[in-house]
Image (spheres, rainbow, N blue to C red):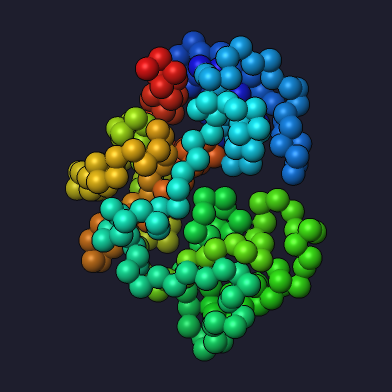
Amino acid sequence: MQWILQEFEDTYKLAEALDRLGIPYTWHKVVPFVGALIPEPVIVDPGAVVMFGSYALWKNAEANKYAPGVFRIRPFVHECAWHPYLLNGSDALFLSLRDIPGRLIDDGRTWFLRPVGDSKEEPGNVKSTGDIIRMAEKVLALDEADIPTGSLRHDTQLMLTKPIRILREWRLWVVDEQIVTYSLYKEGTRVVYRHEIADDALEFAQRMVELNLGYAPAYVMDICQTEAGLKLLETNCLNAAGFYAADVVKIAAAIDGLGQT
């Protein structure tokens, strides 16, 4: 597998893991909005290339027909097998940004908000209805041609749900239908990175993987402990997800192993 890395704090961690495994890689900068790499990589086999860095790398991977390139995933909220286990999945409201001013009333209610897709135009967070409406109005006041790639757009699909108190949050890395490593990343409102997971949380995550086999060759899954039990928070693109306190050597070895199957 040929590894192409964009310079970020987390990709430096990945480079250290690749060094330990004796796997070569090259460093590149990405031209904003265009997606071209500097320097341009010399590709030996387009069918055995993997890229790590910003999510926008998928455009370069797709344009050059790299495989696996970037592991793009379907929106987790559309996966029927997971619906019973989603945090607030049953009462979610789905709106495009352009629909928000006409559909929401500034009634002081708070919502947990996140884009339906995996492109991270807006991080998942809690906002009041008024703040959400004002956010939408600012974007809608812009000409779509002037909106940078990766930013909220008029047609961005958003999911709005009732905020729920979360006790702990974990991230798990799934490669070839197997959980290869994990990390605690939040306790209550405190951000904490520890390489640990409760036994029941690990069992729950493995059950979520088995319920939806074939979802993607590799992805990250975030789960949480709530007062109502364990829930599936979201899935994310593995190539652009933070490593927290995961065993990065295990991630690198598992991804590299995909090129040998």
